[in-house]
Image (tube, rainbow, N blue to C red):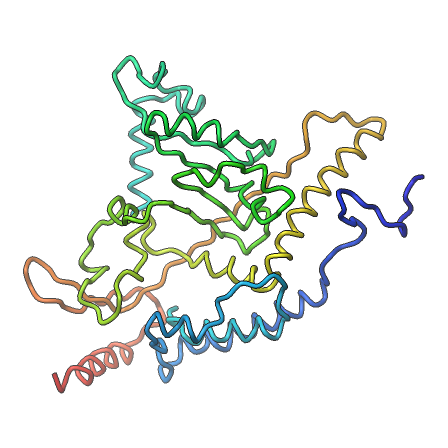
Length: 361
């Protein structure tokens, strides 16, 4: 029987008729969230009568903010309350990647073929030993390639890595979200054996772009040991709170957007079951499309259908008053003035405020 528009189409236990979200309700939430951001973030950030932040110790913040994930999603009014809470306790603010770019340039100068041929343009390795005597240290597996959606056999690759003492990294940027599905997480069988995993919830789970995560198994502080620049003017060790919460010195990007907040909010809104439904529905729709293509004349199926997602990188910087030591001198304030909105009165206020806060010391 050929299904009509009104009859239910069931694939893998998933009903594919109609959308599963209320577009109007979503539009209303975005409208209210934008109003909240305008009132609580944008306007207050430029109001000299507002605090820059409402300080609370990190452990206290965990109690003030409802961070727990649940199986079922939460209503819009509760999500707006969560947004307001996070904004209330957030700082109100209006070059390490270039090092990576420099390394890429040096590699390209050494081996120009790498741009067109990828890693195949590098000297060949034979049984983990190249003609130059180079020793490999990392294997990068892929869980969900961008075009074809292919998944590498992680358990088999992990066996080789463990046998030769190699670091196993899994690029699960696209396919990592299958872990949210009890039906499809088998595609990533063996990922628990990886040393590190890259995952982009903004792809399959449709979290706000950009939302990327690097998950590392190591608990010995390897990230900080590897990437720390020990910049004393950025990451002071004599702060009055636990400096382990300063994550900037664990990343090559130093300052960056709070990607985790976007995924946390998505998870809070949909719940674990809601995220699982997104994965199941996406894969069910892809299977449905394949079967429909097979039925139609004039269409030729080249490979299994896999969507390709483009990322947009939208970053902007913000400046705050910081302090630093210099050549053995004591800490001093370092003020950088760039914004055209800054006025003489702001400079006067800055000096007056420093004087006021330090007068009784």
